[in-house]
Image 1 (cartoon, rainbow, N blue to C red):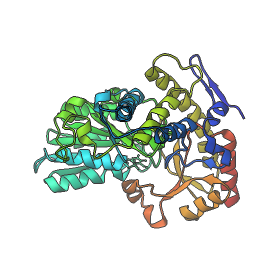
Image 2 (cartoon, rainbow, N blue to C red):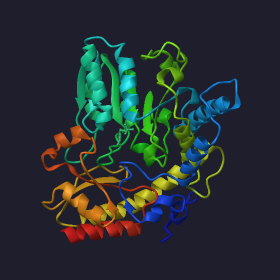
Image 3 (cartoon, rainbow, N blue to C red):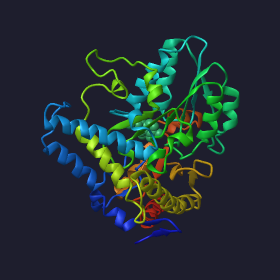
Length: 409
Ligand SMILES: Cc1ncc(COP(=O)(O)O)c(C=O)c1O
């Protein structure tokens, strides 16, 4: 099948894009992108090339060391192009979870009893627990933004009552990894900024599906993991370098005092950083017609990929909704292409296993969206089943998934 989404500016050829992912040749239908996507072949090549080359630890006194410095610098510029950030504010770390712990601890050093932190019940626990624990240590109060169970929305109005002059940080997701909800981050950030609070945005799910502009979002910090967008298992948190300058995380005496380096622990993974650069380059080519700077090609390509994904996701969602014994957990319009559902009385793990046996990869559980599943009362039966559409999924694969579900019901 070749499904091409065309409008005046965008061209997305899914068959061409699929050919860029060698692992698709194994024949699985990957609706598990929200847990981690396949890696583009160019990413694998870049990682292997770095491991094969003469590359030492960072130093300016010999060529292999200078190459290492260059790899790190290139990866910072690549992430800046992906997110609309300043390369001097791009921090790397092993995972979004570890980066959020790191930043939350550094920020909590500046908090006092009476300060407040706002977290949401829609977020992945990686953007909840680090703040709750940091608040606990510094005596700050945690305030919870509830989502609406009947719609899956995280309304701005909830934040009007939660954010006040005591608020130091608002931590929220750019998109739910469970149901795809995209809160109005810019409006919530504006509220937070009006009282001088910082905004920490979990962009792990959103970055895979959308063009991102951290400044337009109003994110003071934005964290994302490359393994959700065709790259390797490494993460980044971006911020204004001036903001990073104002924080002093725990670090070794001899390690760099400058930012962003002072937020990074130990020797960087040069091979994975090469993979990050390759992943951003790859994303910038998703649209055949993308032109201009890499930033502009990324924006065009991610916009086209998003339009394509939403088309495929529309078929998946309407197909699931049409099945009487399938319960689809609600999410408002404008969501990311990710859905959680339950099939009849089956436990989510049973459903996922049955689909897995047919080569259709979906997750079951709470996918660490712990508070969401607690609030929905779904933890006792093991959460739900999650299918997420990435830009290499096809309408044929949607039919394959729906056929499997139909057989179950
Ligand atoms: C929305 C969201 N936030 C955070 C994380 C955690 O990312 P990492 O595995 O890089 O810590 C995930 C991982 O699934 C996620 O989906």
